Length: 426
Image 1 (cartoon, rainbow, N blue to C red):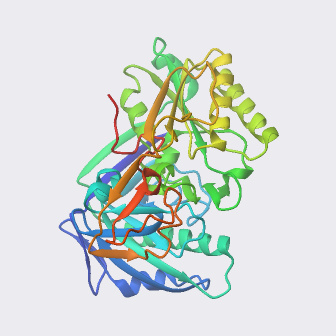
Image 2: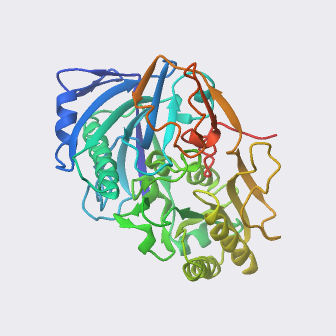
């Protein structure tokens, strides 16, 4: 598959009577945005705000972050199976609005929502302090079940992102990048001496409110599957889950997965990027065994030399991660795993809930239990009503002076397990 990704850089966002993009500025009609959201009768009301890097603004509770895009050539549209029809994506031409994001927020459903600070020490831990954020805060109708509200807000965010992305259809990109992978046989002929490498991405799917959608199908219902990595880049995977904010993969991360980007950068140079393999994270032991068996089987069938495995979440998914690692290694395929750690506030506890000697090549996104103090900011988009309940907070989180004492867990993207984060290690 060959995908051309056109980048259109957004330098500012402003509300206006008419929605358009001109000279790098996104002008959006708030009334038009509201109409897009309130197409769903499950949502009673919605408001929009804009948060810019460096402003004294806190956004909470954050649900998802989405990059607006538009498909201008080739099969399919944005978010196939969710918004667009179920066509295979990953080829043709897509434009992405870089430097901005649609952020969805609203009444808390699961306790694992997040915070984005646009300035101060909290901004140092989230990549989304550097994006121009169009923030959507939606309220449900009375009596709506929690999971129905959560899905309604998520899907409304996708519709808003599609509406905004469509404004770029007739523009000329500031930059164009081309991503292309050959077929299996072509790859063998083109790169006979390069190691065959794949990316195994574990998708969060552990029960209600832990949803990830692949072409519109909840990942709970899938068996390990081969994707061309350009499909992921083109919107085939979207987030719908309420795992801890620090290591959640918002839709923006799926669209801009750094593992995929880095493997493409080395493709045909130091390695042959064969494919992406997606698998799920399960609740029951039998399901964990089935999915990890299938993942290892696919790696063997593809005659891979190495894989990178990333997980989403912590605790129970650590078992899926280690199962995948040791079974793939047992097939003679070298494995590197990407995770984060929950080592306690003092850093002295066991970092992962599971371990194995096969997991001897590990990349970590940091200790999510590390405590930080977030000062009071001038403006809150959303509400602080739930800030003491978010995973990584406590009943004493909101202090009398308005500052927050929290673990990194509460900060969206702080310890992301694809490497889409600002922490590093020496």
